[in-house]
Image (tube, rainbow, N blue to C red; front, top):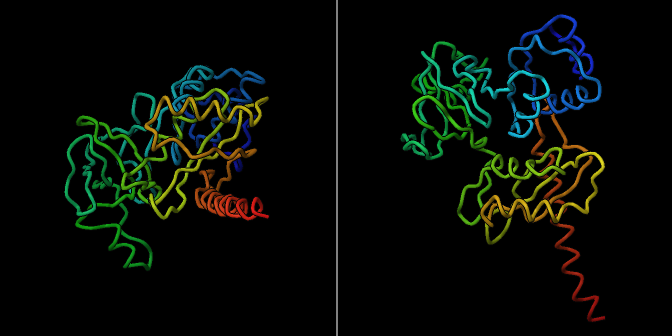
Length: 290
């Protein structure tokens, strides 16, 4: 069934009442569903599986939803321009499955195929590709070349049939000449039990190019005092250059109309906060001198 607007309790009640077999939603919606299901359990035995996409879904959330709902939560890749060309993976993580008759290429900035395991842009060709953008020949020419749709997503090919999502190409953080996937860092931060949700962005740096800044919302009952412990934990999971310079605590991460994390807003917040911090740092010597 279709529900006009999302409400976790309404969705859970509908699954129980109408014996729904498939649930589709964004990661943020599954987090809300999990919270309400724990608060007031419904009979969800009719569910066969659940799908999520459109944003990064923490592995921990996938596992918790699977346990609480009694049905696996899988990641699925989709784009309006190429819907139905790739399937969902049968294991946790940002994984997608190549399905016939779709064809896939993973290429570098020069359009050359990369070796398996190396990141590159995902190109898709198949029967469900769009014909073009309405009244926009330029955008069509940029996105659709020789029958291949340039998705703008960076992935790694894992074997013959699976692809691991790295990041949106435009969201990649470049620090010290190294490409950093925000998804990898967000998964590591969100794995901490005190973290409800996490996102990272890059802010400009004259030396490094960009620095990594993180945003989190905390689990119920937790305060900002846990932040140093979260960063210490992340430092054991990631290389030093990937660890966020600091974590900014928000009540909730900003989201756009599609419930995706609004990275543009977060980046603007991070840049503004960085300016304020630098301004304060510049003022300290003069204050000491006076």
